[in-house]
Amino acid sequence: RAKGEGRNIYKVYVEFMDEQNYHSFLLERDLRKAIANEEFVAYFQPRVDGRTGRITGAEALIRWMHPSLGLVSPGEFIPLAEETGLIIPLGKWMKKKVCEQLVIWRESGFPLLPISVNISSQRFLQKEFAEDVKELLTQFQLDGKWLELEITENSLMRNEEYVLQTLHELKEMGIKIFIDDFGTGYSSFHYLKKFRLDGIKIDRSFVQNISCESDNAGITVAMIQMAHHLRMDVIAEGVETEEELAFLLDQNCHYVQGFYFGKPCSIEEFEEKFMKKIIAKG
Ligand code: C2E
Ligand code: MG
Ligand code: MG
Ligand code: MG
Image (tube, rainbow, N blue to C red; front, side):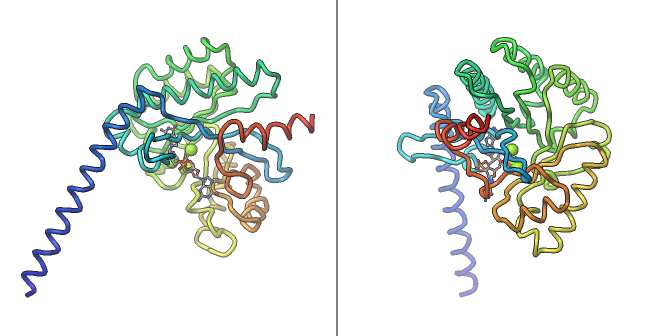
């Protein structure tokens, strides 16, 4: 019987794999079409100075409006896009979209906010990356300070010379660069020292329950102090509760992002909820 059971487990496993493969096959096919049809939407999530509640910027997060599945979150298609190289056109779409939005705001008299865009390491490591960004800024006549980039730790771990050169070029354009999901990748203090980046974003997994989970508290406090010593900004991601915010402020981590302040939302909603407030305050 044990043998039979083993076979069953094996069979279930194979079927599961097949279904998975089939699912990603369909998803990849749809994703290619989606790029051609521009089925994507940029959502914005505010970044806030936790001391005052003032908005200091926003992060652009991609959403896919699938014709039959509805809104698909990036967790479901970014990994596939990375695998298939489709992340390259997706990333280009997003950066352009953000620049277009900044121009719309500028022309309609909204005060501008820096908007950060997530950059896949594949894209970051392409030779023409910095040049493409420069072209985009020129095309839209935008100052680099309005476009911020979030890269991950593994983007820094390749060809050191290339990375230094790219970071240098981006810095020349006035673009700020943050390490996203800090602490979850192959963090190396060497890279932090070597590449003078503008800031880190502490991953949500460390911020969760920070006021009662002493491991998370210890790690986060250490990250905040280290970043400040290196004169880097710190943004805490995934702040959901008042207790988490209080803890972070107490540790001098002032910049925060999370559901407590606002979920990612459509640009219209973002303007309604957050930008009109800035205008009202003057
Ligand atoms: P990320 O860059 O670390 O973005 C933060 C994620 O955390 C977002 O998930 C956001 O909705 C979520 N989040 C923010 N605050 C909270 C909170 O308080 N609680 C909880 N539970 N979640 C919170 P989202 O939008 O699903 O994006 C997931 C990931 O997909 C992003 O992680 C990023 O790595 C990737 N991604 C999203 N848009 C793009 C894009 O345009 N290009 C690339 N390359 N990657 C993207
Ligand atoms: Mg991010
Ligand atoms: Mg993150
Ligand atoms: Mg991420």
